[in-house]
Length: 135
Image (tube, rainbow, N blue to C red; front, top):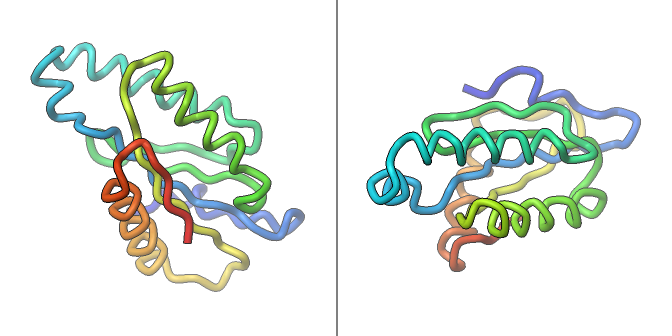
């Protein structure tokens, strides 16, 4: 289920990007380093997401995924998203993949939105992990 505040459309900026972030190989990380280390990593990733300048809201989905929204379009946020990837790798020594899509008005299906996010996340992972896919 998509938390309602994630879907807040920014009328002033004209668009909102929705991001689905997945920690690459999180199961292996838990097996190799323990669940406590995994929990610390997840806590830090959520903190880094919440520090993004245009963040609207961030929620955890499942054990190793986060869905978050940012005001503005992809061009407005791309530098910050790429810096998030870099920061997570440098500080936590883990990689993440992100599927990104845009909502441009209040006319969208939550199911279609999640399908697009999941598809984009799969494409990002298939392209080598620690990647993003925006369509």
